[in-house]
Length: 277
Image (cartoon, rainbow, N blue to C red; front, side, top):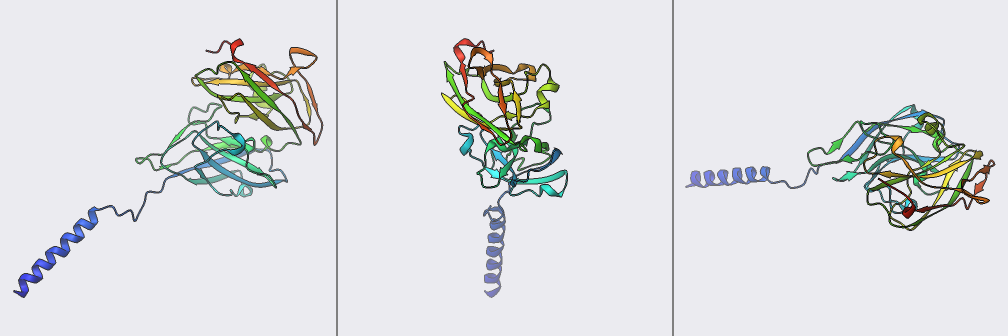
């Protein structure tokens, strides 16, 4: 009788162990991550640098650039360790429209105008590429991109309001605000001066901007429209410029001195007057 009881007990224990092994108790949850390397290729960190981190944004451009939502962030990067800095961002299982490195000024909040660089994908286009984190691909690596200190190492600011009239085009993907000394005529001139704001919200009635620049003279302050199927810089469409107050319809010129914070450099966009593709 004892042998029978021992045998039955042994079988019961074995069954419990087998069943326990087949049940996912969630003791080892999947860890979702985005990993890569940033190449700090140009310039030096400003003296007023507080922190530099990589952010993963589910939505880009955000509805509010001053209060953007992120799903993951890397924590402070050791940017003084060298040109190449590895990062790892814990995230959730979803898609991310921007993986970018942000600079934070001492005494200021995080702001997307501190964007120093972002992942553009294998195509190498000028615009952010989406990263997909899935159950089958929980760790996305080789999310590599470059960062430019000159984008945040400035000595003045230009700010203003942007107003929109008419109906937004349904294929709107994002906007690009740019400030140039003169109107660029080729890709080299476009990239030579790095005064860009990628974070303007879309499908709104109005927005504002405050962009860091170096002191100097700027004769072309422009807002570009970017459609969902853009392939090249030549596909950018000018939809508004800062106009000369004394001669409306012509681009205005501004003189910026060191430590200036120039305001009221406004842009008006009327979609009814535009022929967007």
